[in-house]
Length: 300
Length: 292
Image (cartoon, rainbow over the protein chains, first blue to last red):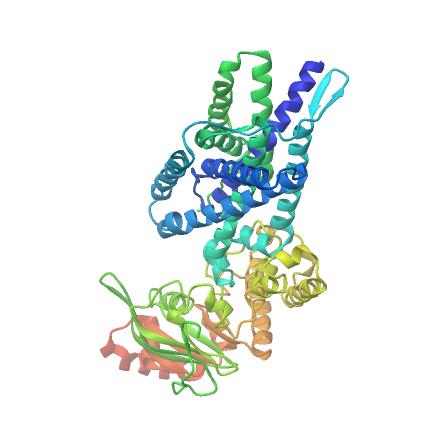
């Protein structure tokens, strides 16, 4: 039983990270109907931004408090990746809006390759380790919870609340939801649709950056390749929860995290990715709209 | 200077809100609108009528930025004297700067948003500004909450006019058809338009709903907004409009008061579908039959 709870906690931590990234996929899909395959690499960039901040801060200001350092890593990461994603949308996606459906998809895959190769060239192909930042561990009964796990879950919860508030309670969020339903009509009511879409990309990137920073803190290593597997898993999470649905993305992320850690705990760890993607295949076959997705009703 | 703004007064009379000059719209080889000129006067209800395929909706689409006209100039003059060339504005600037709002022949509400939210989206620009583009709004500054209160007040005002107050928190998609039509008009009014363009607002309404719509339109006009509407139902057109423009095959065939238009032989010909040389005959028939 203790082992099971331990795995639940590990899964929850991992799931939080996937959930944060999944929101970026699902939001962009919701608002412009495209899968931003470069989003996983945006997550990777967030990790590298955090890594660079970590290296600069620890070499110039030795003895900087860990909390401040972490805050700095996440904030700079959000800023940098927000800027990256804004630029990508502006130069690679916006000119193709209204083009045939596959065009933005292909461009997105291209951007994904550009980003990971860019990091490979500029940062080197080897894994970049950082020394552990947060090492405290709590023991409750036979269960071990590390402080970084607690931090990840808390930061995720706070961000999700802020995000939920923006989408549901602010004029910006209302404009996003209106744009999602009928872009042209929103424009006719005075909503600057292009700007709303840009902001959506920035918001998605900011969440992914935090996920990237926390991923770095959790595993202590960053690699140019990090965007791929976690990115595809977050995408799986978005599809599992129902693409286009924000609570679905979070739920999907948690489920994927749990499946992955429970599978590794009770079955072969080598097959954990197979298990995850098998789930994706099953969901697509039996419930194509995902757990919380609305079936698309086409009015004729 | 914002694009599309002109400071020179291009000879628009003070009581004209929209001047369409030599508008042409070509789709491939099809001339949907051919050298159309018309004026919409401030504070009036102007009806744009004509047989199916005459190009009425195309005119609307040019005015509201859906289409870029092949040729022609669309000048809108606001109450403060500022003039905008509609064909040069970006889509969201037409409601924001020029104060033009429109509705569609087929209803285009945000059906997943509540009725109230539909009306608040229409006040997006005012709210965004007051919320300091969201950032200050998150801090809950008093100026922002005042702006929110004001926008809700305005939404309530139009909910009341459109007789939808008790449905404010329902998803817009759940309303009955007539109510959705009124909500569309209320939503358009929440953008504070000076010119409201309505594409067949009475289509599919029963007589009672249609009467309620007429009252709503008169109220809107009396509050100072000008209305341009497309309508098929001649009884509605004759009852509510101050000025009627008739199109056929993308060209204007008549322009004037409802009474003038009603008796114009070319209009009668267009509606009854007779050849030009039969027009005289039609007039004769009309005169004979005019007594009953």
